[in-house]
Image (cartoon, rainbow, N blue to C red; front, side, top):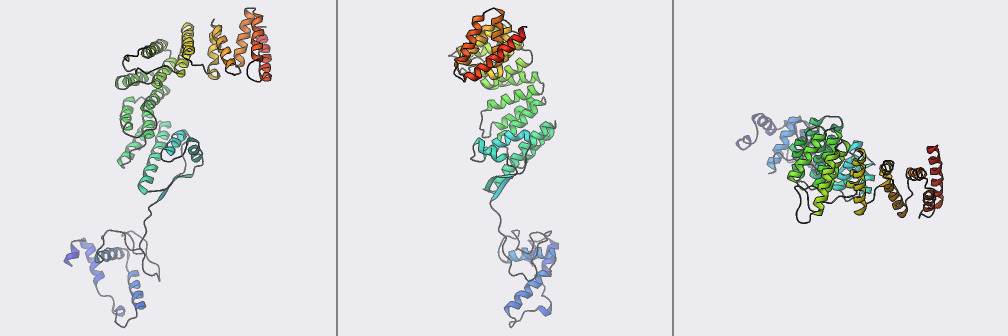
Length: 434
């Protein structure tokens, strides 16, 4: 018993000693006992053991076989003292339990607000395109990954769960709970997808905790990303603005400017903040700084890359900011710069800006936009035609009215549509001036 006592606690030793006692005399084996009866007797003895005794027998059996004493128990004998599994009456030899090695990951449901993020992450661990991933996610509950190892399946589940929970807690205003979700995930040894840290950073910024958000950015930097880090900074600025934290937006921008190289997306975000909060002077100064950085091919200004150049969104945002501040001279300057750079205003979104500029005396900008739309084969918005015709009537320039109608008739789109538009505009313009 000395060799066994070193492997078992005293309580278990007493149970093992019980197992080693000879069975009752009516079960004694004789050389003449048939093999079938012997096996039935052994099975009956095993079935007569209680749960603890079955567990001890399993350990003892493995020791005698030279196996790991804490490995999987023999099927039917129970894997632990609390196991309820046992061989049924009349069962034969126990079969070894086969461990499952391949698993499927199933998306049961998700918060609608996190749909875009979920789609992106499903794409990250599958080979699906955007449309295929979107169609798959919208079928939830659905299997999104098949036949993966347990470790990979657990990791995918943990990351998707964290992503959805962070978004849900954010919307409920439970910021500390959102932070705890990510910390718990890390404690389990799962370091989340970049999107999890992006969501948490934006959540923190939205609630005035942008310094903590920068710590999440440091973790995000170490993970594989499908988008540049500047996208994260843009999201943080916009989240702070949505939370009404304008000063935080400026602080984030200054921090990025001091530690990173700005890109045009970050510039556009801060211009949006300025335009939405009556900060025309700050927006104009930043816009001019970008233009200087663009024109300087030898060196860049502090925080500004030499390749930084305004894009269509930059010009559109500055037009909105100028119009909001009623700075129509600067509005005209930005519009001309935009045209010279080869960009066109999105007329489906910003036609009202040109109409307001026309009423402020800049009607020739509207005429330029009208001609540009015709050349591009676009049907001008009725408000554009209305304003042009009204301005022509005010100036008694009836030839201009005929010219507008003829231009619409010969434009490269259906004459029927243009004719109906002109008639509608003429009626509207007449009513307006009566």
